[in-house]
Image 1: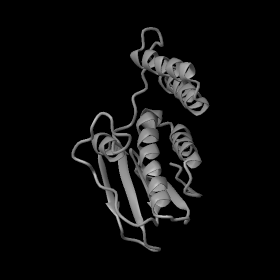
Image 2 (image 1 turned 120 degrees about the vertical axis):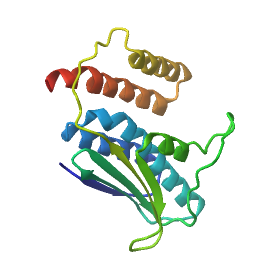
Image 3 (image 1 turned 90 degrees about the vertical axis):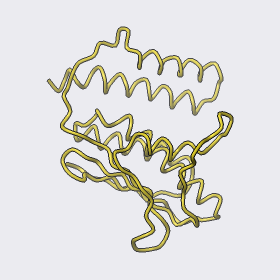
Length: 188
């Protein structure tokens, strides 16, 4: 199974590249069943690292490492050298603009944590996803609730005019369609 790592400046523009690296790795490994969750959790962990670097005036690159813990479980690790440790908040108000990243990781990952061990100082946020081998099943895109929700989000982004949000939602629609409706047919 392939592994990958990516080293990049602590800038928000790299969050998307990190997500895509994870998606590409999982597609190459034919584990698209993990892609959506892995991309979302990677996005949260990288965003936390980039924000911590910005808040701590840290310019040292962020490192993303993705490896197979075993044939069925992927481990994603995001390392930064910003001061402080991320903390899981017990609750987040509906109007809070941040604070949900670790809550999402906590709710979706099989295991996760923050470590200060290792060379170079700083901290690493990691999570593990996986399960048994995927069972490819074909789902029709007709009446697919995920397709409908993603398309609604894309239309909302288009109405708002935010170019980055439009691109992200369009990629999400296409990725879901490929992963849920096309690839399972090819893998039979």
